[in-house]
Length: 409
Image (cartoon, rainbow, N blue to C red; front, side):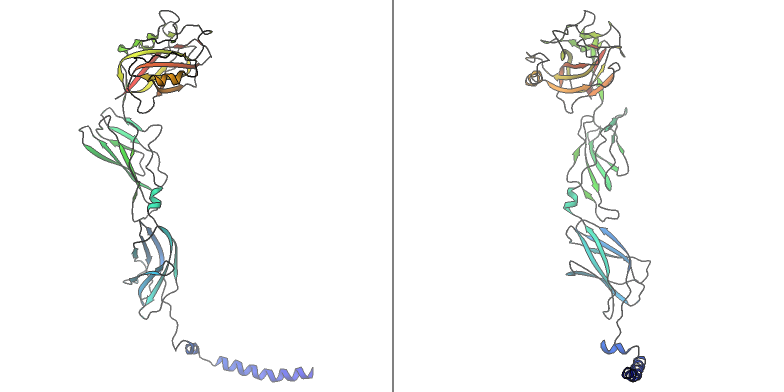
């Protein structure tokens, strides 16, 4: 213990000496290690903003208020590339903008430094996820879709209103090309926040094409267009065909009638709404020999570009719940040999030149008038053949009040 006591007495004066020496060194003595200079860091910037573009990018920032700053330098590509911007303002309310071109489509990281005239540079400001866009982004763009339920409406003054769905990204506008009533090419534009656009004086039957434009984000430098125009669905006005020209035209294996005053011609007698017996078409009741499906055929008297059928059932029963509508321009050699119940009947119809215009399915009691659209761009037809597949009460006897055919104009 005595030895340790003596050692402690000897160490205390030495510690005091070291403390005195340390306290008497100047605050600037570190300059000996820096060539008698201080490390100076110019002020950093603030308020970074990014403006992405097509193969280019603009970066903006608020300048540092440090008056010593003479320039800014941006580095990227692992600091292998850089650009220098002279400092012209030290007002933090101003904005410095730097446009960088010739960039590949990529998400870049940039390093921004402030420099003073002596070459001192600031602490780094790192800018991550700076996106540059190009063909990859463009390939993901699609033209805005027409509204599937109501793509257009033809007005009485000859104009047409087109309806579009809400775009799923930042859509700027959609350019629409059409032909006006004077036969002159015209252009209309619908903005991204609009759902409809009017085409004044549209010339019926002419194609309408459209192309949409987008930006990848708000503030983007460039607008990107889809690769091509799309064609809008056919625009037409539906007009009821002239029933005064309609005639019965039975083909082999068509269904018979219940009695002479319930003929097929009852389907175009102009009645409105569900009718009662005998003011209806009423097929024969020969269900045991002629089960469903069963067919009937008629002649519209001239060629039509058909777009729709409206069918009205009887006011009580035996109404079709599912039926096909077939059309053909010329009945010559168009008769089929197979019964409608045969699995090969549809194939034979097609081989004879008939086109399936629609398969109508009703989910109600079949009484009220209901319209069914035909396939787009259906070939012109004069003769119609209806094949009834099911009735609402599973009867093989078929009743209907009225059928109206609509042509495209």
